[in-house]
Image: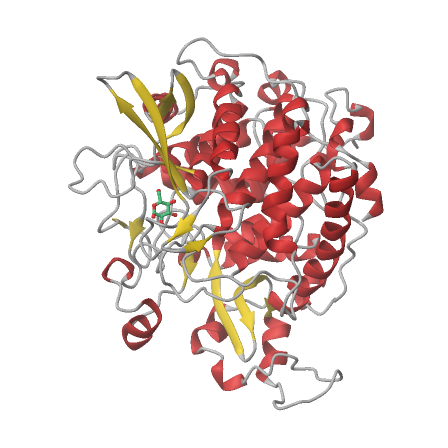
Amino acid sequence: MDGTKEVGLRNVSSTCSISEMDDFDLSRLLDKPRLNIERQRSFDERSLSELSIGLTRGGLDYCEITYSPGGRSGLDTPVSSARNSFEPHPMVADAWEALRRSIVYFRGQPVGTIAAIDHASEEVLNYDQVFVRDFVPSALAFLMNGEPEIVKNFLLKTLHLQGWEKRIDRFKLGEGVMPASFKVLHDPVRKTDTLMADFGESAIGRVAPVDSGFWWIILLRAYTKSTGDLSLAETPECQKGMRLILTLCLSEGFDTFPTLLCADGCSMIDRRMGIYGYPIEIQALFFMALRCALSMLKHDTEGKECIERIAKRLHALSYHIRSYFWLDFQQLNDIYRYKTEEYSHTAVNKFNVIPDSIPDWVFDFMPTRGGYFIGNISPARMDFRWFALGNCVAILSSLATPEQSMAIMDLIESRWEELVGEMPLKIAYPAIESHDWRIVTGCDPKNTRWSYHNGGSWPVLLWLLTAACIKTGRPQIARRAIDLAETRLLKDSWPEYYDGKLGKFIGKQARKYQTWSIAGYLVAKMMLEDPSHLGMISLEEDKQMKPVIKRSSSWTC
Ligand code: GLC
């Protein structure tokens, strides 16, 4: 990890030498008319090596795909489509309008976007709040459009909220916990604005959001990378905020694994879905946040100590996840033949997984070419379900090796009907039904099979899929998914999620005008249009963390 430490954010520069990039023609990758590509902002001479894994210069994370935003756009005019040499899809303008309508102001300053503006919905619940995770695609859209101010305000406001004392009943939460969401209360009489935050003490199920702090760090890097403004990340407040978040995760205890032990419902899937333990979504975000923090923490006394702990953890974490969470045909076959009750360090079946616990569907689902990180692993328990967010973030953070990233994309292609269907992208596959559903979800009527978190299809995931596609050099997969979304999203008023095996139906309890469905679409469009945006949300492979296993047939063919 030492190499990475040297390459701090100080090296962020829009002068990153174009000559470092090889001569692969991007227009082939994008399969668009060359003329259009050449008009795009300084990207014409950039190469595939900047975008796709496996062809990169090791460790030079901070030199790839930086750019200076083209300045603020005219009111309501997305820079991206104004700059665009080909006709933007009519949905784009609508999406921008809807996104701007969702902006929340605190004392006159934009500080975030509301989760949903669905006037038709009877119960508001907490959809009138600014969720940290929901704001990420909004933030990326604004950054890509050269409007960093709202992102900076959001980062500072949530940092301020982190400083609040957090209690649930008589129990105090860790100092570093970031809110799941916050709300601005306007008092029209006194003409004052006040903030109200939820750290889990009001949330359905009373779970603290483990993902919020990770998204906050990831967003701080995206802001820094996109604007070239190092001053925000370097403030003592941001440095402390990062250290506090990570202190929550890096403490030593009874853990025998480097992964992070979590309660059910502590992330995007924010209610009981059997993802307690070591869910891939959190592990991938944890890994990415550690890498982002490593690039932004100062090497002062407090920072140094944190940096050392991060480096050690990253090393162990990548080994653990790449080895034990990975599943492909070969690995499945190995588990199928596992012996059990092995004792001592020579054990092959380290977690004592009983082959009989492998669900039938996996054997049909697993293609001969392709693979993915499974949902969870702990003693005698492997959750074989596919989770889209964790796998996409694993690609973006380079937690997945180049071979694993390719295999994940292969899987998406070969299991298109199951994972994408008619609306991208299934949050988890397959759904849990009948008796399992009763036991695992606690009879949750919102999470019935193929609905909501239980195998529902979430348009917001489109931006993550698109980013992963660009990174692996397979933008045609993203284009196919975006085409699908464009047939429905606007017409259906930007639903939160779709239901059904193929994602054909607007979700039973889905909100309309769900902001992250809108922003996710815009981010996907802008990234495809200008793949240099990928740099703010992607990290190149760190050659110090070499893959340790090579067991997949899909890695070699
Ligand atoms: C739902 C989702 C959660 C999201 C929130 C606001 O609770 O499960 O992931 O953050 O709505 O949109």
